[in-house]
Each structure stands twice: as structure tokens, then as C-alpha cells.
Length: 212
Image (cartoon, rainbow, N blue to C red; front, side):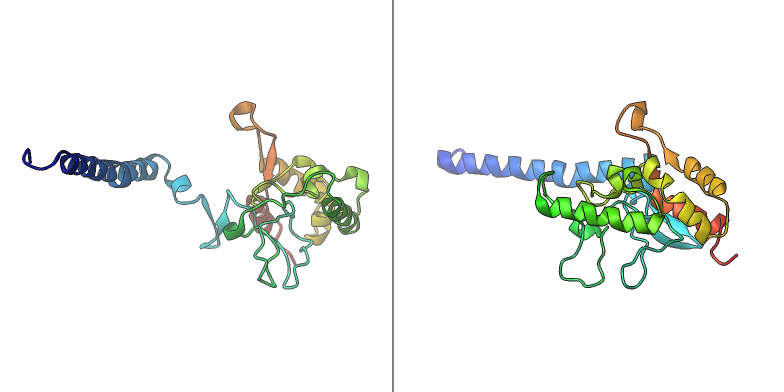
């Protein structure tokens, strides 16, 4: 190799370093991290999937729409936050589409956002029979990802009476279930308490099935 020109030797050394780090960073490191994740955090590594009646119905980390065929919210279920994660080319995509995670990118003074919030307030006012002053911000605004799995306890509270009526049970019984599925602040101080909508709705179906 010493007989080769200096620039050729330098390129060979560079190629060896490239191959070495490709193996370390592109093969060894991912395999080690995947192995550790599968052993120590198996459920999270597989997407925190949630099953009901023997089939996978979603992920506890992602929001899910509870709507009818025409996109109207189902009264027997808690509804998630509005979602901007929508496939713009699909007619029946009403949000919470993980392939299109995104925010609306509209500022607080944007006229389109203001109009959307007012429209959502009117819909919730009619749907949940509450005053606009009772509607919390997260009920009418989407998250940055459009995929938040939780809603605020205040958002859940304004939906309790509607769901109790739809499931022929008492508001107190529904509220007790909400409390059970309310998660505290991560690490005790990050973020805000939230209610996991998917897990709560599955529990509703199990404890207070519609029609019974």
C-alpha cells in the first residue's frame, strides 16, 4: 500500500472508517437498542397497542376518532381533541391519522382558526348541552401533533352527562370511570393531567354496554 499515491491511501483509510462506523451505527447499535427495548420496554417498543375482545383496536399513545359513517361524533363515546392529522384526499378521514401527523399552523389571531373555534364551540354546546363558558380550550383546539391520546379532565367532565344518558347509567358512575382513567402529570410535574380517551371508551363498552 505504501507504493500507492498518498491520495489513494487516504481514500482507502476513509473508506475503512466509513465501513466501520456504518456497521457500528447502522447495524450493531440499532440491534442492541432494539434488543434492550424489547426486553425492558416490550409493550412500548411495539407501539403500546391496545386490545379489546381479542383484537387490536389502537394505540394508547395515539388519538382515535369515535364517529359514525358520515363523520358525526357518536354520543355514547368520549370524543378526543380536534385533529388536523387528516388525509386531504380522503373523503372519510376525520382526523387522528398517524400518517398525516401535523398541526394547523394557524396563529391565535388567524381568522380561519377563530372561525373554526367558534364553530366547534357551537357544535359542543348543542351536542353536550353545556354553555360555551364551560368548554375548555382543548375541546376546540388541536394539538401540535394532531394525535394526542388524552383530553383534559375538564373536557371529559362536560361529556359525562351525554354519555350517561346514551348508556342508560348515572353520571356518577361515568365520572368514577373517568377518574379511574385520569393520568397524573408525568414525573409529577410535567404537563397536565389527562384522560386517555381510547382506554376510557373501551372501559365504557365493557362496564356499560349500549343497549343493556
